[in-house]
Amino acid sequence: MNVNYKQLIFAREYRKLSQTELAAHIPGLSQPNLSKFEKGLGILSDEVLNRIIKFLNFPESFFEIQISNNVENAHYRRKASVTKTQKSAIEYSNKLIGYIIDEMSASLDYPRMTIKFVNVDDGYSPEKIAWFLRRFLGIQEGDPVRDIVTLLEKNGIFVVEIDEDVDVFDGVSFLTDNGYPVIVVNKNFSNDHKRRTIAHELGHIIMHLSKDFIFADDRNKEKEADRFANEFLMPECAIINSLRYLKLSSLVELKRYWLVSMASIVRRAYDLKCIDKDKYTYFNRELGRKGYKKNEPIDVYIDHPSLFITAYRMHCNELEYSNEELANAFHLPQDVIERFCVPAKKYSLRIF
Image (cartoon, rainbow, N blue to C red):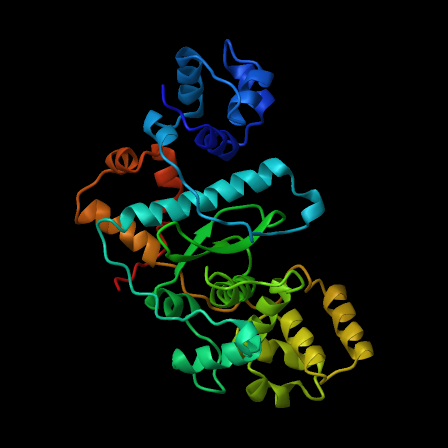
């Protein structure tokens, strides 16, 4: 039996199983033998491999393909408490989303990626890149970024929401094996948090995902993505007058207009030197005292992702695939297709 050991690791860790846990469920399999097999140093009998495949509930054909999709820049929350099992399961979930996007592209034409990669080393600051992008997308100087998801999807960037613990996963951006840009975001955060995450990941896509860029070891990509997101969502020239002499009572209205969190507004005021360290500390203390660090008043609007789900719907409605047939065509379990592709009923879909 031709089984790619990397795909076995993929399936096992996606199912949140350690080597010891999997071996305990498979007659004739020991953890040492499984470890050697997963390192490419040992062999397992066809009988044992069949038992593993059946238990993991992945089709045999899945173990003969290869899925790469580099998702190494995933942002995990409270890193000290996030287990390796949790990280691996989320990483492979993101890889599966990218793989499904690539597989669906064989039958569909996606919107073309029109946003260009820009290298900070060419003399462009993250703020300047954000300014150029706002102009390219037709966002007026003093306007907030409305319909952020629609803007990105129309310009060829997939935005996909997944259901994960907010204490574990925030978001990630990557290029699929076929080169499609993808942002995956945790659906369980507040809308202002999701908008911030999407803007941050957009910065990563533009500044850090081109295969042609070479990065020095001392480059702080996270800080660059933060700077990009700040300027993209709250451009300095438009917001700075509102941040001078900032008052706690004005934060709600600023949030309502700019569609960002009050904490982000306070931080922006500090970064732009509109408030000093003492005032910054005061604002954060008051936000914490009122419970706003965990749950801010008012929830801002965010549009729902549609491109990924629409592609799936077109396979079902126009190409007449059932979920079972789609799973077979993509060499995946049906539960994977249903987990990532079947939309919540409240979502309305856009056709691009």
